[in-house]
Length: 381
Ligand SMILES: Cc1ncc(COP(=O)(O)O)c(C=O)c1O
Image (cartoon, rainbow, N blue to C red; front, side, top):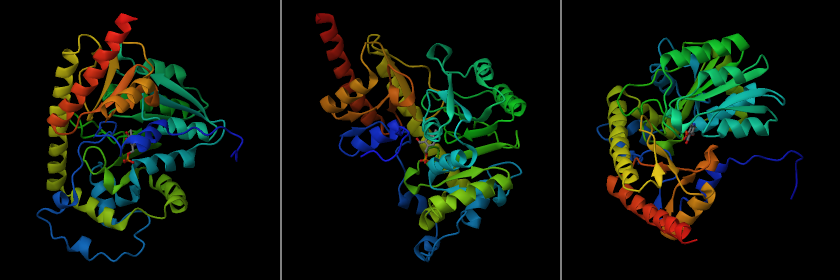
């Protein structure tokens, strides 16, 4: 059934996950750590704010307490700088629907989460991609970004730390990106959902406060391991928050009330720290398991040293499209990993490592078996 003229760009990564994640034995296509449960969050707390919460429509822009707790994470921000959304995904969508019009030029980084890439395409924008490369440990070449930008650039979208590579911008690189935005007049969209997942424990600075046209997005999903809350936020100048809020009313009215109360619990300083520590433990152990496995794979796979996030972007050194390989692994050994093509880069698989080490080991042994079989078949041919 054809109902519109322009070709709709699916969100390939999320589509791939939603088709298969419930039917495999081991799902490593996700991008959070093993998520905490409600009783973890309520441990040591008086549960009454949750249990006695009247289920009216909640505050549309987010509860006052939650906005204050979020604002406290950003120097000199107040609750007026915050809009609470249904995950970072909704915040990203609000940013695009507020700022972008047909014909606008947008720059994104590739490989990437591809949400802004797809949204911008669906809005009829001209999307340019700054390419990260494994031989450069996936670091952004800011010179390349500068060469892509022009006075027509409406939005530069940066994910820092990056999904799927975990690479982190230095302060100097961040300053150069801000200067570039200033020079061209572009808005800066900073998706910072992986702040707090740095394996060395040094939290990546936010772009907040560096540029008045920056919109910083974050959520409870990654660093805190609470993806099921579906709570995210945008932090920006109050005038921009008002603009995003007008779109938010159309999209969802408000985020879920019980989820906002749980997020209030989670962002109390001691609980927040415990959640961050929990997440880092899973990620560090998982990356070690994965790196040891890669070393034992006789050159069939390689990976850059892990820096942040609970995902690894693993290159494979045999000739097969990544959707075919991910599909083959799923069918043969019931393990789901994300194909690099859905993140904009072929011959890679994105593997989530933030689960119990034994689970990661079991999945990797299965993937290794499939790869050995494929390599054997190629050698016979
Ligand atoms: C870079 C990035 N931004 C946004 C999201 C969406 O996150 P949320 O669960 O907060 O909607 C993801 C999820 O994978 C992501 O990787």
